[in-house]
Image (cartoon, rainbow over all chains, first blue to last red; front, side, top):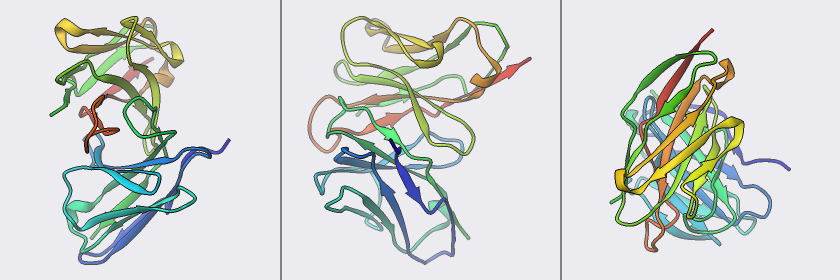
Length: 114
Length: 117
């Protein structure tokens, strides 16, 4: 079975631009979570979506938004990019909502903001 | 609020030596606990998890971890390290309760493991 896939793999943007990152969960998984991993740090939780609804939000500004589609894939959008948004963005999928369900991570999208 | 501390930023061991990576957590009740491994430029792979029951849990690749409630710790161990174990290791805590934290994983800063031949 295919694992979690993310696109694109790498991305370079300029300050002030907008970016959209995409994630396809493991087949049968209904929950998608997004994490930001800045170099040298552990991943930080951004959002969790379950059954197309936002179920959890981390401490990120409103420039960050996401949505989940009927096929359970997800997009993460970041507006008005800042240099500090440069990071590895990880998507994780799980069967259900909640900490009991294992989260399976994709390879990530490396975003560089110049 | 939940938090995780990994006191060791970088650990170096010789191949064949034993390994222990430390993890301390802060959470109001018994949390869900996880260890993940990340190779350079890769996503995270789950090594093992603790939900309840036996406090010594076995994982993949010969790793094990022990949950100690009294010490709020969940240390990762391996009896004999292989060169392929060189990577970054993350301890994480997951919330049991509902609310906006439900399903959220809180990660430590990670421990980089270097293995000498």
